[in-house]
Image 1 (cartoon, rainbow, N blue to C red):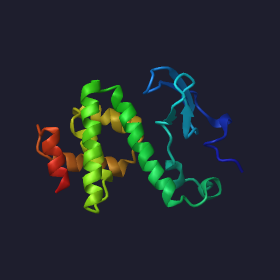
Image 2 (image 1 turned 90 degrees about the vertical axis):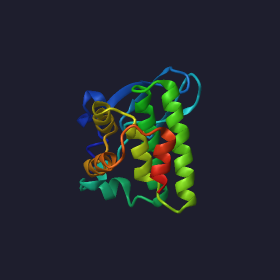
Image 3 (image 1 turned 90 degrees about the horizontal axis):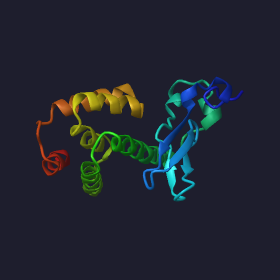
Length: 175
């Protein structure tokens, strides 16, 4: 049996979409089950920002379709999620603010790993912190984050003091 999510007969119109290459701005066409595509203009590989293995949580064909997901794929999925969120943020934030946030993420991730702390949720907090509530909700929906993760992010955001600078936020998240 072919997975209904991969069978194009069951696809809706939004299963095939275009986005601008983050490197050169050219249009790149994606199918919902593509993990990545190479930009025809600049030849860089772009991860699919809408790729989601969330179906594995409930689909009776997941084991047949995906097998057991290896740890490498889980790590790759985390990287894809980060890339997807950054790609979506490009539409929401000025380029200089996004660049600053990316540098902050790199620093936070490096320092958390040095301390032996998983950076997952803290990196997401850094990404969502500087957005107003409407943009946070939009990013959550567009990124197709699991609801439980979104609830955790919202709770943690409420516990953070408003108006922190990027530097202050990083220091707070490192504790």
